Figure 1 (cartoon, rainbow, N blue to C red):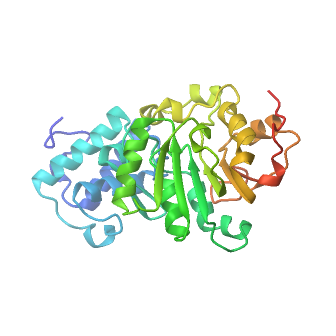
Figure 2 (tube, helix red, strand yellow; figure 1 turned 120 degrees about the vertical axis):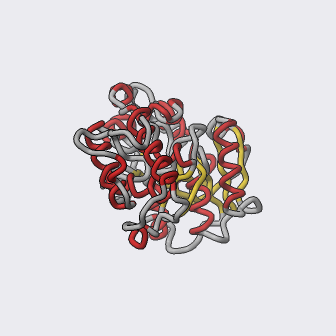
Length: 310
């Protein structure tokens, strides 16, 4: 459909003049098409603003001054095409724009890795420092690193720390390298390809951050189309979501320094986590999204060969 055609019943696109007009139109389209949010924005207005500002080459915090700006015909065409792709193909906006924002930090984003959105990003700023005694850890590992967003946020939050980012997927690590370079952290973050702890040798860390695949089979079956554009291997965690998490918890002790901490995102799988680790002591780290979505385990709470329930 061309930018001069009609896309909403009773409305002509040529009557949409300002950015405000187009954002309202986008919200209507998103609502009518049942677009699902959750890859950086959680509502139609924020999603529309993200796409609108990006299409105009404007920073994401510059909406208010430009709301009533009149768009050129070429700008209207480009924004209309972007809105239609979002509705028709259900591609996350981060993949359409090639960038994602997490805690105010920009990352390159494409289907080589999950869209950066880990809840651990908030925990790094809020609750994790208290658990490590208010001091900076010397060594941090981002396990299942994907695009390395957590590694980068950790390096920014703890400027004296040495940070490793480990992932099995070579494509994800290529994207991670782009992000590390984007933030000028090549000297502080080492990218390692390996299956969980296998490539780390005898390295130990004071803090391990991990957002692993944890979506259970039933939830995978119910995923919205937007999530199907992301790597399935970065989401699917087996029948109860705990397949990789069992291995992570079992192997973490040997790579944690004395007093070290494992921070593990489990999302909506708290019930499955508790069932899988009935004798393991842990704490939940509350974040804005929920009270039971991130767990913290101390090295001393992780005996070798920790017993799990299958």
